[in-house]
Length: 219
Length: 378
Image (cartoon, rainbow over all chains, first blue to last red):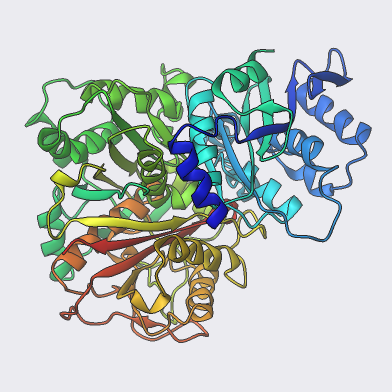
C-alpha cells in the first residue's frame, strides 16, 4: 500500500511517466488470433462458433464449460485464456483485476432471448440463455476460470475507450486495489466481433499510454 | 493527498414519488410500490413495483415539451433534472450512467431497429439532453451497477480527470426481465420478504436515481456525504448463484474499509442488497458475520421498491443517505422472523439512531459484488 501511495504522489509530480507497462496483448478478429502482434491462429470461411471451437482445440484448452457459453463469453474467454495461460502455473492466488468494455453489451444474446418470448404460441424462455443477457457475465466466466477474486467492472462505450481504459486501469493500480489489470474490448454482435485485450502491470515492454493502447486496437 | 469526493445532492423517481421528500415520507408510512399486476407475456399475475405510465407522462409534460422519449428516458431525465438545475454541467463534468437492460423493451416493438436498444444510444440521448461535453461512461455490471457507478465516478474524480460527476441509474420492468426471472423460478409469489424465514424470491421493480459528486470543497456543507472507500470484488464461484462463503462481498467490504482506514465497528448502518432469494440473503448474512458486522442495523429496501436492478444500488444509497441525514433507521419491510442461519440485526422499527458512517453493499449475477462506505459531513 505504501508503495502504491508513493507512486501516486510521484505520478502527481509527473516524475514517473510510464510507470506502468503492457506485458502481453491478444487480438481476435476476422477468424484470426494475434498474440503480441504475431498471427498465431486462423481459420478461413467459418462462422464464429466454428472458429471458436477450432481455437479451443488448437490451444488445447481443457474447460468443458466453454461450450455452454454464449458467443460474447466465448470471445472473452478465448482472448483471456491466450494471454493468461502461460502466466498461471502456480497455486498462488492471482491479483489481476478485470476491466472490460464493448459497444453492444449482451445485445446478441438479448435478441436471441427476445425471440424466445416473442411468439406466445411457442414461448420458451430459457434460464441458460437469460443469464447471458448481462455483459458482465463474460468477466464472471474469466474470474471463475482463473479464480480471480479481484476487482472487476464492465462498461459500455460507443467506440474503443483508450483514454478511459488508461485512466481507470491506472486508478486501480495506483490506489493499490490490484497488482495487474487485464483490460480490453470484447465486442460481439451477430457474427461481427473484435476482441483486443492486454495485461497491464509494472513489468512489460510497451509503455501504458493512450497512444499505445489505441495502436493495439487499430493494428 | 488524494482528493476527497463528496455527494452533495441526490434525487429519485419511483412508484412512491418523483422526488426524495415524497419517497422518504412514503417509507416512514410503510408504503410499498409493490402491487399485483396481470397479463404481461404469459404471466397471468405477478407482483411488481411499477410506475403508472400516465403519471410519468404527466410529470414529464410539466418539464419538457418533447414527446420523443421512452418511459425509461423520462424517468432518467426527471431524476436528473433537479441536479443539473442546481449544479450546471461544465466542460469537466462527466455523466456516469448505470443500467442493466436500458431500453430493452424496444426489441419487442415493430418498426424499431435493434440498434435503438443499444445502451450507448440511450446514454448519448440523455447526455445530449443535458449538454455534456464529455463522453458518457455506461456501467453495466448486473445488479451492482448502481453502486459500482458511484465507485467508478469517485475513482475518476480522484484521478483528476473530471471536477464533477452526475451519476444516474435506471431500469424498468419489462416482459424481457419478468420472463427471465420467472424462467429461473426466482420470482416471489408474494411481495418479497428479504431475510425472512418465508422468503421465496425476488419482486421486480422500476426506478431511476441520481447523485451529484464533486471534489470542490466549497460546495460541501454539513449533512453532505464523503465517499470514504469502495471495493468491487468478484466471487469467482458461479455465474448465476452467489458464493456460499460470501467471499467476494467480504473482500469488497474489506477493500472499502482499508481505503477508508476505518475499522468495521465504525459502521453505524448497512444498506444491504437483500433480494429475498434464499441464497443471496444467506450469503450476505454469512459475509456480515465473517466481518463481525452482525450487530449493525441492516435493511433491504426491496420490500418497498422491489429489485430495481441497475437502479437499486444508487436508489438505496440515496435513501441510505437520507436515513443518515435524519438519524433515523428505515424498517426492512417484509421481514418478520429470521430466515438466515447467521444472526443479523434486521431493522424492525423506524427508530432514531445516530448514523455518521454507513455501508452500502450489492451483489449480482456474474459473481459481482460492490461495497461503498459513506461518511456524513459534520
